[in-house]
Image (cartoon, rainbow, N blue to C red):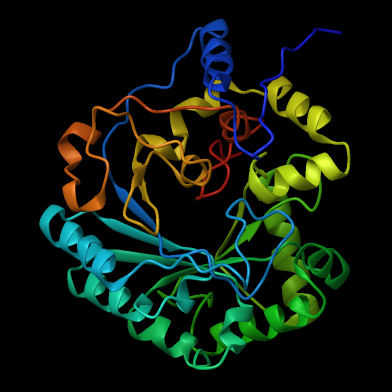
Length: 339
């Protein structure tokens, strides 16, 4: 069996400073490279780590006890950047982004600019006080809704997200269907996200999408547009889970051995810039969570953001990048290689 030199991960649940060398060496060994970013098509904004859930796989380490929230001032800087630079897509995430007091203002302003807006929605936040009208709000602004649902069965979903989450998630999906989301012939887009419940890679995206569509319709009368598979990243809370279950080395070995050079071209960092709740800039949401900022020669905050230098930037990498390039690849838009 081939020996694999695994990247080292430090005790603070962050990738060690030297770990990026291992990933770049893997690229070189396969005669490929992570090319400089192709351009900025998406501004992904994390508006805070406050969430009504505390999922086992969460790479953000979000929970009801987190207090990090993007201020109204930084929200306005994001809006100003969208207005000034005309970035095609705004991808809003969290935590539960809807819990940010300025969330609806951000959506409304971005849509007024003609920006395509998608929201990473956990479904159960719809049942929090003051959030009952979220389906109607999403519809009114033609928001693309991307919802995380671990599985189409209660046991697996509640194991990852907490007791009672599955039933609420199904009811939330029904509410979204009732206002037109995920319905054949409707322009209102409802996509689901699947993360494996455990230390293994996701199955083929097309296959599990078919399973989800069949089972959700037959069991609960729920329909949706697409399902995205996303590999669990070995950072933050999922890394903590790997360590508690003595799976860290095995999982990292799995990612490294499943490295697919054909996935490199489609990784999301080539066309996306990530913004944290303070306004700092990153190459992706995963880099953000380990505080691996954009290259130091670039503007560092959203108020200074200019897409010109970012269109040819060098991308900062770490051991977690093996997650995005394993198997069919992984991004916020699901598998990189579609089969």
